[in-house]
Structure formats: C-alpha cells, structure tokens
Length: 385
Image 1 (tube, rainbow, N blue to C red):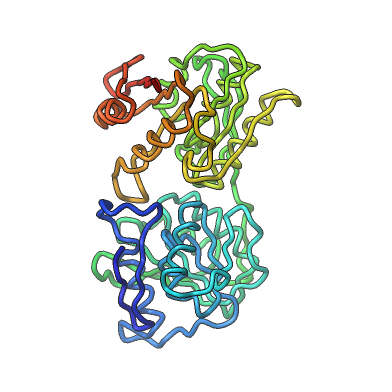
Image 2: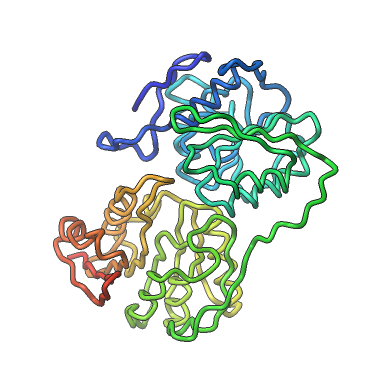
C-alpha cells in the first residue's frame, strides 16, 4: 500500500489482489497529472466536478477514490479494478455506494458532464468506449484524457477527434500527458466496428474453420494469437464427464475446443475481463449445440471455484498488467488452479519459452513436464498429486 498526496487530501491506495511484494503502485504520474489539472494545476483554471462525472479505465480505483465526494460513475473492463476500488474506498473511509460501478458491458449514463478517460493499452477498447459514450456527451461536457507518453499516440488523438470532437494534447510532465477534447454534438459518426469476428485457420484441430467473436479490448482480437494456435495443436485428448476450466479465457477458443472434442465435458470460462467473458460466451453459443452446457464467470482467477472440484485447467496466461511486464498474474493463476484441481487433475499451460513457467509450476505442483515446444513456445503439464 502507498499514500497518494493530492490537493484533495491524502489517500492510502493499493492494487488488488494485495501483495506486499508487489513493487507497483495503484496509480502513476498520469493519474496525478489529471488530478492536478482538475484542481487548476499547470496554470489552468480549475475544473469543478459537477453533474454526472464519469471515469473510464480507472486502473485500480485511484481516480474514483479521490473523486468519491462527487459520486462518480466508474466504467471498467476489469473485475480486479472493481475489487480494488471497493477496497480503496473502504480504507479511505468512503461509503461503498459513493462510486457507481459499471462494467463496459453495461449501459452508460444518458448524460455525461465531466468525462475523464484513462487511456487504455488497447486502442480498440478506447474506440468502443468512446462510441458508447458519445451519445451522452453534450457541447458543455468537459472531456479530459490522461496517460503516459508511451500510451498516447497520434492514433489515440485521432480516435477522440473522430468520435467526440476537436482534440489537442498538453505538454508532457513526468512522462505523462493529458488529452483535451471539445465535444461536437453535430459530428457525424460511423457505428462502432466491434465486436469483430473471424474464422479460425484449418490446422487447429476440432475448432478449425469455426468463427470466433471478439469484443474490443481482448488480447489479439483481430486474429488467433500464435501461442494459442500452437496450444490448440497439442491439447490433451480426454473423454468422460470432466470438469474443465478455460482460465484467462479471452475469446474462449481453448474451452470451445475442449467442449467440442469431449461432448461429455462441462466447461467453465473464467476471465477478469468482462469483454473477454462476453466474447467467450458468444463464441461458445455460436459453435455448439443448444444442449451444450457451460458456465461463464468474471472473477479473480479461480478464487471463487470450489477446492478439489476440477479435472482439467487450460491456460494461456497473460504476462502484462497494463504496461508492466510481470509474472504475478500467471503465478496467482497457477496457485488457484492447484487449489481447484482434484487429486490427479492436470493444469496445461502454453507460454513463451523465455518466461520460465516450468520453474514456477515445479515449485507449486512439485512436477512439470514439457508436452511440446518450438523455438518460441512451450506447452507444459503439471499434475496435482
């Protein structure tokens, strides 16, 4: 936990799940730059939050917590962000209902008077959210985006300009930058291009030629990523009434493959992204029969899965948390998988060879074998003894 000092007060903030070894804070220079700008920093006039305040993409709830007195609406794609926001509100004495929390799948407010946008890593997610919010923005809406310099590109500014109105940027301060956008209600807008659908290649087993649905913001939304493609060629061949989990499911292609290969299996799709779980659900429903059973869960990995209840876990873990490269997410997923597996249950993982997942799996499970590998990827199997 760290303390953020602002003109609005001091706030104790932490990421979720909490880890005392985590070197990363729950905010960065971009969040601080935006908060200073609202208070009239950098020689500007203060922006007094009034009316409906909407905070989009707040990564760990820092912005929503600081602005809690103004009853903001937080819109996020991340289950972990929502959990972090609730925890940060509680540790700073704010009421749990002082922030209205919406996922990106929810209908946004009908009117927005102050729109604060933390620019996401995914340009597609930004595009989709701006399209969703544009009808609620009016000529008097104040729109300010924020991000680190490496996150704000010409393409970022063009999105704001094309969907909301004329856009300019601030000077960079501590490698952070602000985006100022003046709404133009008369601006002609094309519909959002999301979700995006594509057909899988013909060399990936039982799912070859199937169509997958990808909502904005999920990993590799416009094509099958090469790690998953490699994994699909080496999935376990199993029969019987297995309980299978597609952990960190993305668009759900791994779980769909397991379901099609073994119709007696029951598959649960889990991701912390609302967009990912929506993608997996549509992908599964479009490619299986009406009687196919599956569960879809937005969650912190397998934290909500009953212990010793799962036979097989399939995972292509992420190794980024926003812009930071970290193995913390994969490590948490491995621990959660072990707790949820029955004796003899198996975790199958694909990852970049250089990530060294085999070391973690041996430490957590006491065993790990390499099922397949090429110069870039390895497929690993660990068994709960």
